[in-house]
Length: 280
Image (cartoon, rainbow, N blue to C red; front, side, top):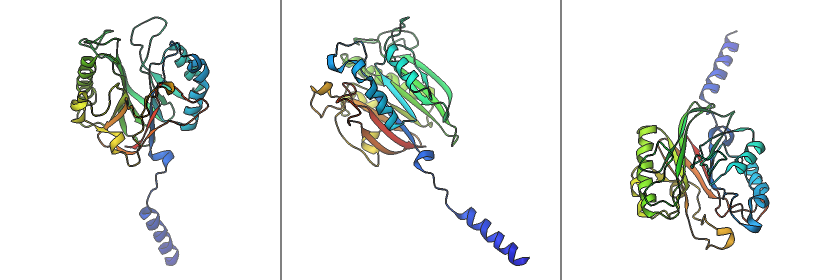
């Protein structure tokens, strides 16, 4: 009897002492940011109808937990909604059109995450209503979510945006506004991921306010690359980096990657998707 009790105690002690291994499927979050290129452009062989199946294949292969889109319009969103019903979508179109304009959409896995809060604000002097800021050529927005990982109970914020392609003042003031909004909505300590098509290289002075708040995934990830993200459907040099992801708080960034592979067409968009793998 004593021997059986001793063996039972030993087994219990070994189980308690054994490390709990969190595999990639349970311990990490894969996030993709992608300027999908609107379907409204006259892109010939690179039109949305010719590349949409490859875009879907990319998402199937990469299987992100969360992804943010820039330039997505209604038919593109409907296509992805139908193709990937396992994701919920958040986002408001930037122009308030009944038929739907460009949306900074965020998708997240329904089964993995609980949506705690979300919203959209405009990059302008009046961020709470549809508006155009400073010298911008277009209305520009930020869509954000606060998600709780049902597996771990941990929370994080994700801010997805697209800075203006023409207005330097709009980009600079937009970054300042985003920094202010991150602090307002997420507070000082919460884990935050921020990114999108920022239409500027990482050394641009507009990022100085952001650099005081967050770290660039491209530089801080354990595994990373420095490939160009704007391809212009094959017309641009392979060194232009316009797409970025930043993070702060208790986030460990494991990988940053530019997804320039062939998923069925030479170019998924005039931008490559970028990927961030992290733990909370």
